Length: 465
Image (cartoon, rainbow, N blue to C red; front, side, top):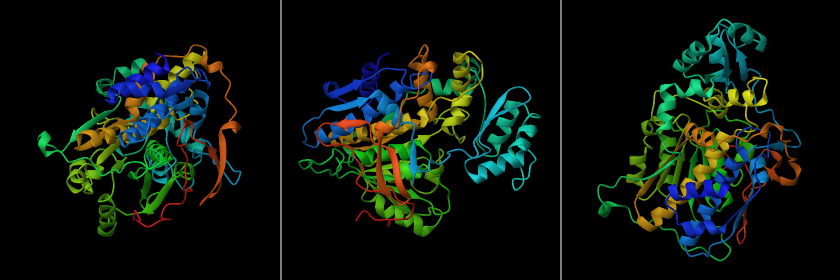
């Protein structure tokens, strides 16, 4: 399937007008990175979809349509999420993160957050204060891979056993994922068309205003797809407020993914934190959250709650493994899904040595992030035409299933990694001098850009003014 066809399918599934596709210009072809999967096509099609949908919403608000050009190599480089701060490139992985051999296979442990790392080490019978990676390697040789995965999952830890595609397909959760579409965009909260919320008040765009100008987005996500989606919306002109808890850790990528956003603190475990969020919900058009299924509802910010408080709002829900199946409530990250769902095994088979290996970027996170931006803009477009409140749902597992459906790239692993330098830009930030990838969607009339520098959590007040 070529990229125009992939984009066309995304566009049709979102219910957007086919005539807008003529304004998309897509250059390049896989392989653009060493992988047997169509990572370039996944990057290019989702970024193009997000940018084109933002422009179509701008057109709905009175602006002429504009050309959207996306180069595949640039899109794939953007999906590496590469950045440096003061000329230092952070290591994205904790020393204990990675693939381990077990008694009968392999498991991947995600240990970037201390509570996940310490939980895994404790499960292995090790002291987190003194353990070395070699200790974890020795301890895991005594475990069967699926047994350790299950024991870790029961404790809320993040571990995945290495599977082939056939082994994954045989699991009940794989069958649940296979029954779900890539994304859903659904009207919520209306008993009948006459009950629908009216179109949100989005004024006509001014000359030169970016297509999402005036759209206010609450971003309650941390790793990594949600922040990428919020960053894309900010590039197209939305006012994005990143809401972090002062008690939860973040990863170093926040320096990159916070570009263009307000960055605030609100502890939703407290009355004051919930009240502060409620106040800004009253002025928001979009609410994006990445809590596990049921988590945000327990705090009073479920879809039905939000639709009652702010009729017409677009809610976006991100999960790891989707909303159906036995793993629906399980925590997960891109690297773990690549392992559990067969991609690491398949890359090793394609290389000819059978050595499991990851794809060259966290493409599940990145593509899902751009699907968040795409779904947001598409739902806003429908809201402006039809009224109602809307719910967009995406997951890493559904994105992985879609990526697999795009087919394999013969000889793709022999492709060289492209140079990053032609795609980088430098800007001041609250973290230091930030060097990162500029946005790959080129809008012909209102260029995508980030006007606000990335700032540490809590740098701004919880207010739209």
